[in-house]
Image 1 (cartoon, rainbow, N blue to C red):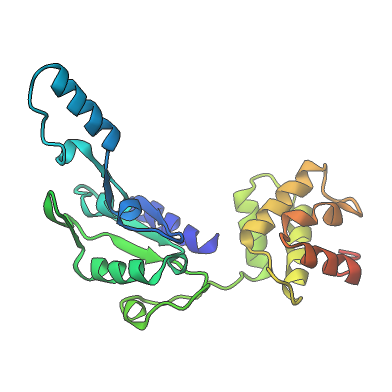
Image 2 (image 1 turned 135 degrees about the horizontal axis):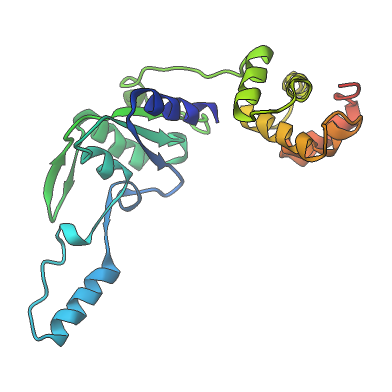
Length: 239
C-alpha cells in the first residue's frame, strides 16, 4: 500500500493526473501501450458493405485503444504521474521494452508511426522483489526503500485514513501489528492490513473486547500457518 500511495500523494500534491499501469505475468504491448478495437472495426466493415461503400481506414485513431503508457505519452495539458506498479511481476521481455520506453519516452505503432511524449511524465516504479530487476533498469531509477512506519506514525496514518476512529482502537491495533512484525511469519502485515484490522475492530463495536483481536486476526494475517502460529504462541495475549 505504501508504495502506491507515494504516487497518489505526488499526483495530489502537484495537481498532476495519475495514470497507473498494473503489471502482471504475461503483460505485453496490448495491455500496456495500445490495442485495436476489433469489434468496432468489424461493425464499420459491415456498415460499409451494407451501404455499398468502401470501409474507412480501419487502423486509424478512431479505432485505437490507448493503454496507460500511450495515455501518459499523449497527455498534452498538465503534469502527469505515471505509476508502473509491481514491475517485478512482469517478465524479462516486458522489462526490456520498458527500459527502452523510459530512455526515449516514445513508442512506435506500425500503422501510425512513432509517437513521442508531449510532456515527459514523472514515473514511479514499484517492486515487491519477487524477482530482481536488471541493473540497466535500476541504474535509471532513484532508489527508495519504504519500510514499516514507526508505531506512532502508523497510529497517525490509521487516524487519517479512518476519521473518527477512537484513539484507543488505533493504539491497540498498531501495538498488535508491531508485535506481529517481530515474529517470523510468511507474510508480515503492512499498513494496509493495519487499517483493515482497525476497521474490522470497529465493526465489532468499540473494538475493546478481550477476544476482539483474535476474532479479527484474519484482517491482518492472510496465511493460515501464520494465524495458527500466532494463536498457539499467544503472541497477542493481553494486547
